[in-house]
Each structure stands twice: as C-alpha cells, then as structure tokens.
Length: 173
Image 1 (cartoon, rainbow, N blue to C red):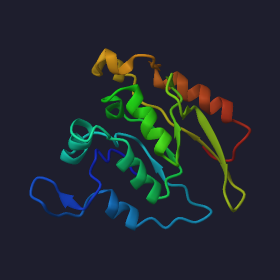
Image 2 (cartoon, rainbow, N blue to C red):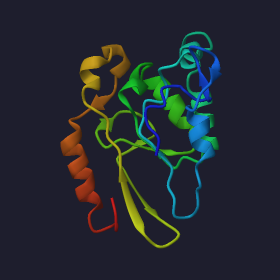
Image 3 (tube, helix red, strand yellow):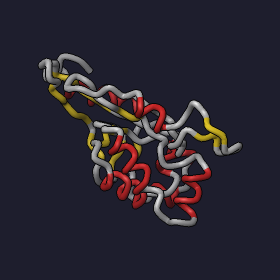
Image 4 (spheres, rainbow, N blue to C red):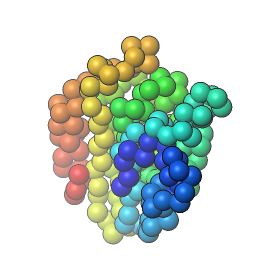
C-alpha cells in the first residue's frame, strides 16, 4: 500500500538533486507480488513535486507518466486523493484511462473509470472486498471549475453503504 506519492517517483531529493531513500521507485522495488497480494494506492499521486508541476504546466500531460509507473508497479487498485482533483475532471479521466489498476472511490460520481467497490478472489480462495473514499473537503478546497460534473458526497455514509453492499459476498473488507 502506498499513499500520498505527490509526484515523488524517483529516489531523488528534488531540492538537492541527491539520492534519497524515498520515491515510488524505491517502494516498488520492495513489492513481492503473488496470487495472494494486492497492490493498492491511496491517492494524491498527480500533484506535489517539481516533476508533476512540469508535467502539468509545461508538457501539459500529468497523466501518462504517473499511470505508466503505477502500471510497472503492478498496482491492482487506486483511490483518488484530494490533490488528484487539482487539474480537473478531464485530467483524472485521462489518468484513469492510462492506468491498468481499477479506481475505487465510493463517494465520487461523475468521473469515468471510478467504481464504488470491488471483490477479488485471491489464489488461496479468500474473497476480499475493497472500498475507496476521498475526503469531502475537496468540495471546499478545490476550485469549482475543477469539480464541474463531479459530485463528492460525505465519505462516511458512502463507505458504510459500500461495505453493507459487500457484506455476505466477501471474507474480508
């Protein structure tokens, strides 16, 4: 499980340019995935580093590289973090379209590629139910134009509803 990558993909301290014991590449190098392992990210991937600033403002594509890196890491699921909304709906949809992982966010409507729940049967037969949510403070923090066509509901009732929908169909949530 990773979360809050914030565009720190390589093991470099972007301020000094020196190697650092950080970055998505370091995390992914330690993944040991098998038929009983899921790789999940908790969001806040698309924004937060000089690299993602460059990708969003100069290259005008902050979606392809992060998605390609998560694909290399074998991610199964992601959810959206509040900063993933910083570039608007179209950017999120391009990111999700390039991503092999499924996006789960039970309290978000209006984004193509976002699902509420998932059930995975592991190699050992364990049925795992997965739910993702994002803070509804996105509605307060984010620019209104970035949320056009998107509805973000209170996460607690959405999570409760999603977990209720999974009940009886899974061994573990």
